[in-house]
Amino acid sequence: MIDLMASSDGDIPLFIRIGSGNESDKTMFASLIKEYENLLSEETIYVADSALYTSKNLHTLGETKWISRVPSTIKKAKELLEMNLDNNWITSEKKGYSYQEKKVNYHGIEQRWLIVLSESRKKSDLEKLAKNKVQEKTKIQEQIQKWTQRKKKSLDELKEEVKELKQKLKYHNLEVISYKKELNSHQIEVYSGEFELEENQEIISLLKNKAGKFILATNVLDEEELSSEEMLLQYKNQQSCERGFRFLKDPLFLASSVFVKNPKRIETMGMLMGLCLLVYNIGQRMVRKELVAQGKKIKKPEGKLTDQPTLKLIFKIKRLLF
Image 1 (tube, rainbow, N blue to C red):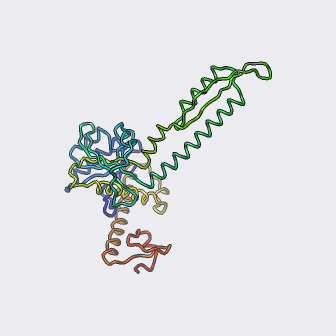
Image 2 (cartoon, one colour):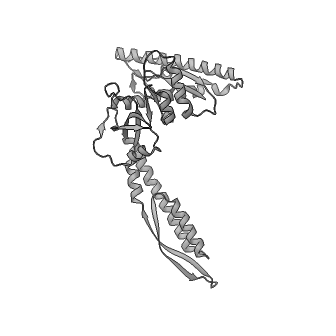
Image 3 (tube, helix red, strand yellow):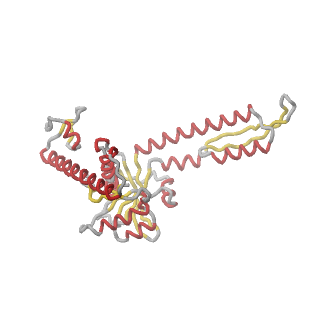
């Protein structure tokens, strides 16, 4: 396992650590931040995903400033996400996003929560909801047809199967109008039922309210130091680490072709990979800044111009500046 911290400006790797594959992010994030903080002479704000957001971690961090995604499983977060918050949305500078802010005290820690609405994610969530409703309805109708065509010899058995099905339903309510008893061709009593199926509007309404939303939290209470807009932008910049991991996992790195077993050799290889990432991203950052300063752009293979090329693209093309 590789732990990585990177700057939001240019994706520069600032901290890399080779850890055990058995480690949990939830147990390591706070201690890694404190370890790095002891090496850092300047004050900064740490950005992490929801693995950081536990009561123990937040108390461990103390006065250390952070931004984290809030797990949707937390009761207060679940309530806010499922509420109808159609009013008071503030449109973000980041296209497709809007937000609302709430002051929250979680386990004795005062913080600001930013409820964020992503239009693209909302569209995706609603499409998924519609698909799931259709799939569940189809399964229920198929089961009802089976009960009708293959009648049960025991009424208790039929009732038990109906009960089990109803417990599994998420988007629909299944009501029994009546159970029917009749004789089959062998003059044996068999049972079927008449059912009424309808959508669970309460659950569907909550899921529609929740669509496209997520919550960010920070312990920086001064809005002049960290505005809501900046909180969202800094969180989205967390992709710096994701881009770093993609670089390290790239097949061109050939890391998968090297097998080492000794822990020291594994750590050495991790350090070399981190140095490669450092050199690559510093070079990329320098090129991008110079392009912006000169007002020039590089032509991509598909014909588009960009002043934010990857170093990989620069290595590939001969004619650079336009």
